[in-house]
Picture 1 (cartoon, rainbow, N blue to C red):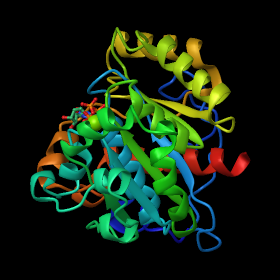
Picture 2: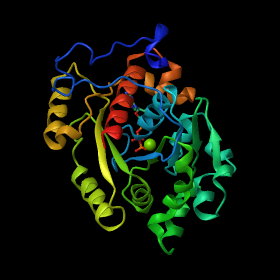
Picture 3: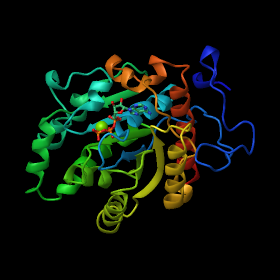
Picture 4: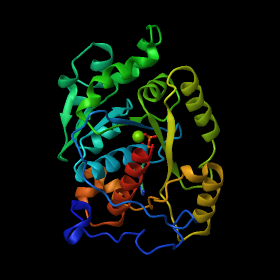
Length: 299
Ligand SMILES: Nc1ncnc2c1ncn2[C@@H]1O[C@H](COP(=O)(O)OP(=O)(O)OP(=O)(O)O)[C@@H](O)[C@H]1O
Ligand SMILES: [Mg+2]
């Protein structure tokens, strides 16, 4: 094993190593291939949109930490903040208020992508930031021709520069999220493991189906990831069971447990993979990255 994720003191026990033990989703852990560095420079990025119109389910946390886990393994990653709240930017230590140019300028003012790209503290991972300006774009786009394709026009030329482009969506199914689904190849749905987790998910699925039928025939659901899971409670396990009943194999075997480390990372402005590299939360996002890689390669 050569990747940083599995070397040195940051060793995280591979949950898939011991064979058919039941995982936190109630299914046996399958074999998930180890993380390998990319075999070639980027040619055509996989574009993944993190979507759930429910707020506070872990979209931004998953964007940052999945991105960081992929970058740590050597992949070139671009994170796109597509939420006027700018939480992704804040979570990576950027200040949305003092940001000169953001995704808004690339969408609406034809700013060049190189003007809006920001480096992050993680090697190999860049950011296009966002701030409240983006909420104006949603209104301005309404009267534009091909209004659903605005983000796709910005991201398409960047595909050859990254292995992965992850889009952090706002908690809405409005025109911005439709733009993200139009630009993406895959949707990743974070679901908070609590009683109402599945409420609203049917509408989310119908929206994905509609975009797939009318605008982006390639769009598919990459997977559903349970977040803020508490495996010690019967409740947590029951919710996970219902999620698996609803989504079957689409549910990632990795679940992200609830830990105060994640809110701490937002304050620190860095991913958990650097803030607390040896923590179970960092380990979980590395295993999720392995699952994402193997699903993207199998397609
Ligand atoms: N596994 C976790 N354990 C504990 N807290 C978490 C976990 N994941 C995320 N959080 C915290 O929960 C809050 C919401 O998470 P996050 O911002 O990622 O959700 P979101 O879906 O992007 O929210 P929004 O819909 O507002 O964009 C944040 O304070 C975050 O730090
Ligand atoms: Mg968010």
